[in-house]
Image (tube, rainbow, N blue to C red; front, side, top):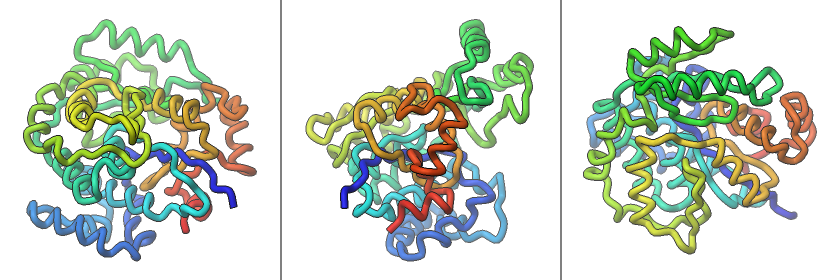
Length: 340
């Protein structure tokens, strides 16, 4: 049987919500050693184990979405999902991720061991809990058919240009993620036309990928040395759409980007997906769980480039019903197509 080539996409913060409570228990009861390693790391830091967070009786927005709890919980779900992909059906050819998902991509891609990846994620989650400033707001820049909306994009560009406290944080397919201080967030709420649930602040999120966090890289580099980084086992695509090859990666440079520009400059997830599609020509994109929020941004970027003939939301949904191009492991029907 010919294996399908797959680009792996790792999720960022905000993907473990009430619907995901119990994700590890439901899907990964066979990975006791992996989960025990994560729990031991948390317990050594005096923190709630991931198994206890996942096994809580009720979901708590304050508890489950805080930086120091959500980060390793999402890591646990995503890396366990990566381990569960059926390698007889799918050949991972490259890996990328959104925002915090870059740390997960480093682990899935073999640059960091499971233990080192967990340490990096938990350290950064704890550091951001203590040192995070400002917040993030999301706003769509596509229409109902997932086509680019030039007027919305122009408005956002103007607000960024005219206000020093408003920054582009993430280009996320059809969503623009903006970073700002409190005054900037209030300005965005006034200036961006309201529709549906937008503009929407992200709960418990700092102003990631913006100058508001320029104080964090030195703190992170002091805690996490370059010696933990190795050359990846497969190509990585970062938040500037640069490719890190198994054959030529400078691990000091990779460490410098991960704990430097990745923290305080814009993250271009859209460009990373474009590069993944054009450079690796995958048969499918496999989106690791938890959650299902990454499907639309990936699809919107593929539509923008007319990848595999996709012309809009309707065309994408039709294709998904017959021969899916995007497989989200957070969706039960698509998960069944991916796991062993």
